[in-house]
Length: 477
Ligand code: ADP
View 1 (cartoon, rainbow, N blue to C red):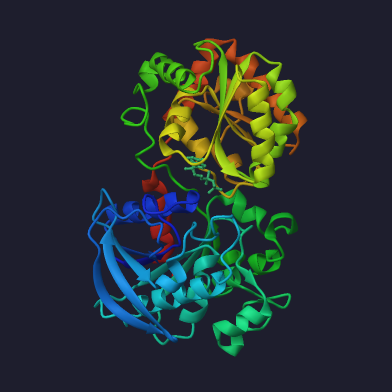
View 2 (tube, rainbow, N blue to C red):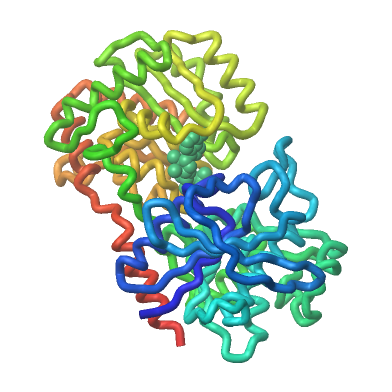
């Protein structure tokens, strides 16, 4: 049994901006189910949705700051969560990284440096918790200073650093770096320096005992100039210690007992799925039609997710006999263009801007096709949820999408491995062609059903992924 400190900047359902929150919820639970002792640590943001009791456990001095360490548990489990409380840094409005106007908090470097230092005090058993970590599992740039600073400690725990998205690196000016009072040996190109700036993610990549990312393909992708963001050399250098482990799907995403959908179903009662489509059409004021092919999308509306590709073929899409249901928020320019299309085609397109967990479940259950044309995708969750819900994903051939969706081709229909549609080129034309390819299959209900069942038969459970992390922890000497 290992004592694992899971260091993260977000965890569902307390606070979530993306897939990291889902992983931070599911992986620790799955590791605990495999007999490990896992504790989570995250900042005590004002926006946290706390439902369980919160207790003061200790008070720490970090630089000139007095930090309270609070303890609570995750809803629906007994997983301990330690909260690093420092109102000056985490008490502001907005989400963990940006203010209400979507602008990064000006003191993000100081905020997450303080968080990292607090996590180190906990990991090293210097926080009056009577607990010392064997493994410190860090996630994304916000936690990148932990492996770096821990490497200076005597008898430090082993460290794992997981990259959920290389596009976010925690890069700050040299001036900011000075305020962080980092040991001078880190301020070199071999350390945290990146072209005169300080890079938090480098702290994780350069100093952790093991580096992981969230799919085998993305582990390869980030070793190339295209997706390595200037750190591909370092990642190639760490190649021996770099592993891709695909994320799992949490039990919450199961159409058989999902309380957030209108009608539960499984692969043997797929005909019931349609009731969710009807409910979705009624709710979103679309014409009720069981037969029409419905495309769904749930996404941050950012370039990474290929939203521009969808927009660029929207006029052609609107000429097809389909409905499209979109849920998301993000770049204002994408939002504006989508609002215009939705206003022009109210019979065909329903747009919901914002974040809505319940609607997300209903879209997964109600849609026939799920669109995920990402330019790059470390792992991606919705393409896996879609397969669990018998909703065929259309994805680009990249990262975790490539690892989890099997394209529908004559041979993959024949050997019953097809689970969706995959395209290569990152452009609107290729996406449109693939949607048309899906429409063709939709005319053959038996084949369509077989592809649905193939996807629903896949095992995306977290148990598999957690076992791989456990193997990794065991091989760190
Ligand atoms: P990323 O972390 O890059 O945003 P992922 O596919 O890994 O992408 O995870 C996104 C998660 O956030 C999924 O669980 C998805 O359902 C959810 N999500 C994204 N946007 C919304 C939204 N507007 N409403 C509800 N859930 C959303």
